[in-house]
Length: 343
Image (cartoon, rainbow, N blue to C red; front, side, top):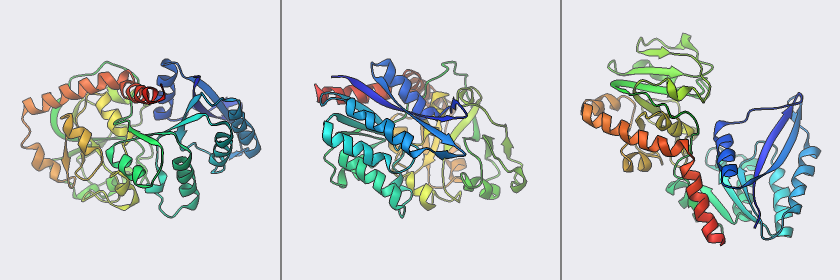
């Protein structure tokens, strides 16, 4: 059995773009355990993918034999037609496909027919599916897919192991894309409880819309460096337009997905605050690495009940998770399960 992973790269101005940390880390982990890259290099010109180029590349999957297995990230970041090419070649050659879900976009964009087609074809074609957690797995199994579904539980976060000691404080750290379209709740934060501080890290922050003196912006950092910046409090995982609940299509998505922010915060040894109805609540509470809230202002009420000893235990537990994240433990474990099914 030959083992591959599909490595998708965009060539623009004769250079490959960097790609996302989540995908790059998965690729590095897979390569470290003996999976060979099956390159799909596509060209972007004037911000458009050259369609014929990518289809030609995908057709090379026909070189795989029925005993081979390939890990494919889902979805791949180009036009919807790619999934039809994979389906056609897979049906003919009968190699094993394991889809590693990064986003299950049907749960976000309910009325997008193109997105639904890609997800439906993935469910139809897969021999194995790596889902984020129990909530996503249940949703996938309820579709009637014949694929074997296994849980990743949390995305690994390769990088520095130098974790600084954290200070207990009533501070929420928010890292990531800070544009209003991506982090809408931040711009409705002016009614935040006066005891709570909000520390922001990321791109496209619009300070003119924030009146609260408790909000501090620290700038933008590369994903490899941001874990070293956190020094106190908790990492906040929230989405939607309001601090009162995680609403809208992005807030609802938290009921199913594992945000990469969870991996970021825990890789830094930072405990987290998550929505009470989120799918990651189960992982957070089982590992005692944070607390849950129904709304952001509820954080102060719960914070008052956390002793210094409680906080340091959460930090210790987060450090233990970080050690695993830094070495690719979670993806290696789930790939081991799949290989056991294949052998």
